Length: 453
Image (cartoon, rainbow, N blue to C red; front, side, top):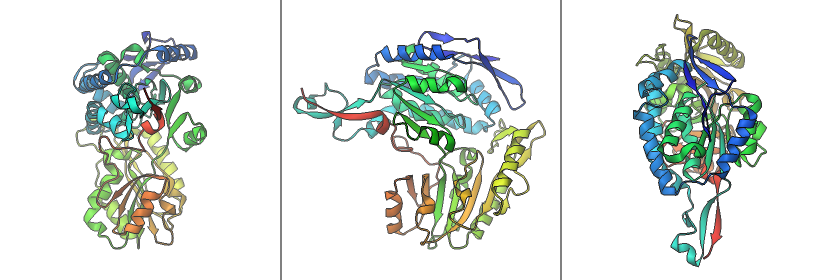
């Protein structure tokens, strides 16, 4: 049993209230300490009083922490033990966990590029910059403490709060109780690399205490479903991170058959668990051939335990998998099932099951299922025409638009609710270091001030 202690300003803290984290078996794997409300209040007050490291020291600490996270024993676990633990608890294929570790280490190594890309071109980073003598815009924080209610669907999601720490915020991470191992390991590495006990904290809590972290911090970011987005949408101090509802658009003049690999990667890459995985595929013309091709390719993906090197699909205990299957069939009523209509449960015979892909064809680009996002490869294929326009494509994190229509591309890029547009043969999960995910986080964290000295 691995103990995951609270990591606060006073060092590790093992609380009386603890929660058992279980694997797929479901054998107990770890005990997670839960921070009480008073502890959270005092911790964030102490973090607010703590000075931020100088910028260059923060960048150097990130690079050191990234290397340690990927290559060294931390918190009693070697990199290999940590990766296996995440795989057997979350059901993510071990190869995807390994890739996530590499992605996190590279993000830490390149953090300077990320935060400098976000700064306005005319702004300087400090009032000490010589350009401030005659007046300059200075890039400054909107607060001192940033809180994160982290997601647990994929380890790489923790890149999302790196910029806040690099910009000088003290960061309080409330982990998902589904997967607390990655943030515990990251926070430990960052503290040991130079951020110290007051620079970054790991604050697991129950749901009753969760909002205390946000209330006492200056700014916060929350991951969750549509209900979470609705809860915090009106709070200017909270940045909700909801479903991605990523999509693909195929217009009539393009040869979609030559890029089926890209379509399949968009739907199933990374196990299909991410907000950047495509869930909606809109086709100008008959969607049936596209649905058939996707179903044929996705059906060939194997059902394997997550620790198998060939595994590509997420795994969970068989009873929750059956509940997801029943939920999908209920929501898919009225659609045509090309794949997964009988079952998405790939029973592995050990009490767990792979969540197998599903492909359904819809009758309308305005069908409500196009807004449905599940934690496995699940695609809804629908017809689209010019009369429908961009309305069915709104509220999309990533849109791959396979089209040569430049007027349409202009409209998609201009649409405020589409965060990223990839034109042509590019899978929706593609992300480049230093480029915004859902805008730059710094757009929320920072502001410019005119300084003259």
